[in-house]
Image (cartoon, rainbow, N blue to C red):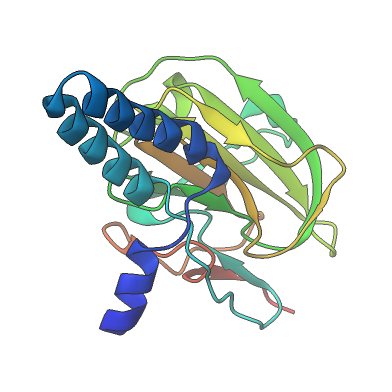
Length: 223
């Protein structure tokens, strides 16, 4: 990635979910002009942070069929065998799970790993432990999606709140067709995203590897 691409990524337009926060920061600046100049700096810093946090850059998704891409930016913190969330009704069979931790510095827009149809969305209330911990997948507040692929196989993508994140937004509904790399939601202020691969499909990534949402290939299915 070139320096120009890096700059474009940082200056990318914000996701719509960030607009209330950005407008709030601008409002503080206006109040500061009238009441106290220190509020101007506070509002400016908050606005700049929100512009950075909610940035939503364009991504180039691999075109070859059978590819599953990263559903989020961040760092892989686990690749283990585990059953998908029970609320999705995908059965108890263990499958490979890839967990991605998003710090406050990462782009927080979630992306569809592979084209298909959303068959179930299930929200689960929970705790707010650090999203970098393995137990966050089970204990934390989460929103899980099941997606049926064209070949009839199913995957699961789970948006998980973190220690600071308190709001999970999902923009798709059950029955919606989705495309690889499509935006489907966002988690505010630090989080985790888990991807459960189809049974028998192994991940191509390792713990510690950095993911680029909609671009990094996590796994490939045989044709």
